[in-house]
Length: 402
View: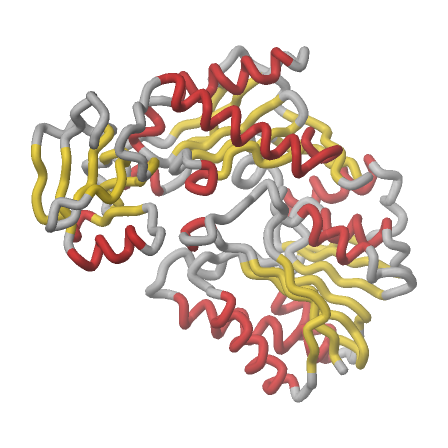
């Protein structure tokens, strides 16, 4: 039984059918066998198996390899304004529930995991920073944004929305790259508080949406380990891990980043928290810095590695793996016995299995034994669908040299 709205439809291969049945939310262009009806770019389409079984409905994207992004698997669903309002309200209510005091700076919408494919919205107090990377959702953004603004108004908050639509994926979707205020202009910089530490977020010029919210609780895990330790934070960026180390009572903290702009921001954040005298920020390539520390026999008690994604596609995974291996082996050699390595990968293609295998190789290269103290992922405002790994990317391990 189908709803009264007749959507155009497509038939997919057995391979794609199997993938959809196992929870995938994407239909690829080369897995489509036929289509029925005229499909406008961004329209809702029904997806069927070769035998005529309904597999789900999703948004059509005529220029992307990901031709359909699945919205739901209920044949009677009506994809009207009420549907989108429900999805946005459900996403916001979930954050309010799980983030508690941290609701004022969190990810409000996390793409596929919230049933809003290609949509990211981060909240920094009363400024919402949005990125949309799918054609169908770009067409429907007015209803999404209006719902978000209404939600905040209900809590007595006048919210502003800034669009950071700069991702390369937009080009594959046939969209232009652009950024600017969707609402009237709000503040370009916002001060947020996260787990007792204040940060200045640069809405307009900061990386991604201005700040990395996903590591929120992993930074606190580091804080609890740092008392009395000599700490090195590689790729410190805005100084977040380094400042958590200071707050945790570290004896000495050094933050390293190759970008002077990032370091200026990190220094401002240190000043904002009255920590400027307890952390030293250094401009350097992390590989060079670790090599030099090794050469002069300088050792640390705790090292944080939080590099940018070494790979953004399957083709370069092996190259990325060797980069991670070299970096982690270097850090392991610069750590004292009993020291801690907090190591991260934010690449979706560097799977948990690949990352763990790389860490074993790195330990062998460094000639050390290590044990896993803790394994973590992104904070709960970045949920991941159990049946689909498309949104799973962050891996965080705390290891100890034994």
